[in-house]
Image (cartoon, rainbow, N blue to C red; front, side, top):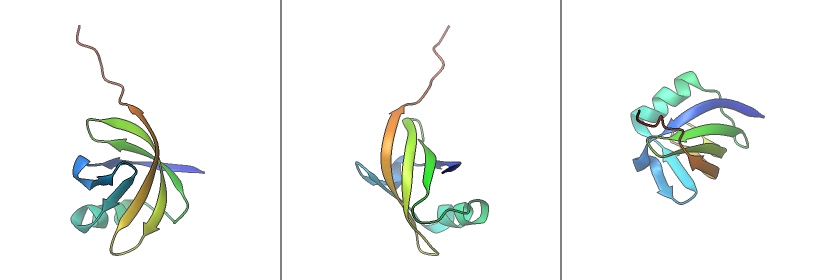
Length: 79
């Protein structure tokens, strides 16, 4: 089931379909999200795209996500 959404920073993208969050960002995510391996979550890649990812691993060392699908972010057009 779809759970909470999560912002991913560009530097957390390790390859075309893998994101890894560690350190202070991981501590923040662990405080506010109850993800489990296998969960499908909504993601937003900062200033880039939005989509979905599958939680591969979520423990005290890292959050590892397999990016499943992304689309361009919805940006407001200048007037």
